[in-house]
Length: 334
Image (cartoon, rainbow, N blue to C red; front, side, top):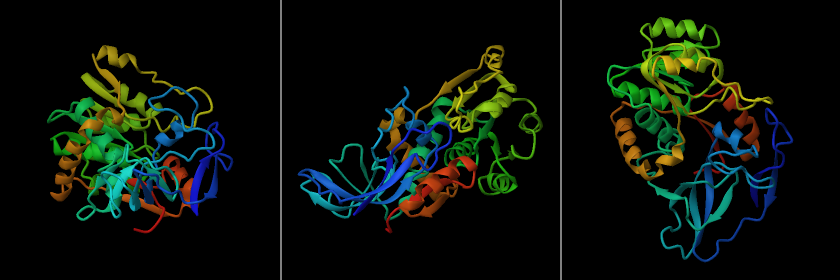
């Protein structure tokens, strides 16, 4: 049987026990030109919360009574005349929260796991890593010697963005929750400093660590932390709007920035980024980040939990902060 997580109800605010249901169906058979994939890992991302809303966005919402959308990596266990993929190939794509699925290959890519662990293709070499890479380089347009502030610095995206800024010769200050995460951001990831938003004033922390202001702010959280960063921009600063995790579970309207006039005063820009816009360049980014990883310049971690039955509990870690690095759910053993 194939276990699947089905979206049954669109949540208002935080998800609850009514949001999803676990169902069992027969394992599908691949049609001619298709393959059957056994899912090894699924990616859990804050964007999932937005995908459940029936509202206009950069991607269509997940339909009710459909398998919950998720990035996956899995192994081809049956092929029915597919022109590219054969049994044993490892594919990344959008297989959803389930143990098995069939595909004609559209939107799926074969990856080599002989040198790189499977999990990395959902982390640094997957959507989060690509987001950090293109967000900081293409939207942030960082330059050597600039001051870069990164929120969500211990997470899958922020950790990559900040480390790339360090590689490019910037001063990098992170924002994370709790002393252990801040210690990890500085001692393991190599940031110059980290502000603990749970135990200190973010505004005062930015003033202390960035006394001349910020050239680039990479925002993953929105809300009050975004306001604190906006208040301390330098002239021609760039603000990268990657996410707003502090706002995703709001039942009321999203709280927007109060200090947006700082953009005017400082001739600064604030630009949203969606990683899918850079799909044609994923290979380029993957090769570069793979090289940095081999050289020991880019450190990445995965926080892995097991069992499709644990999907909701694991998903909730995205919003409680009870995770470090890329959050994954192991579905079936490699």
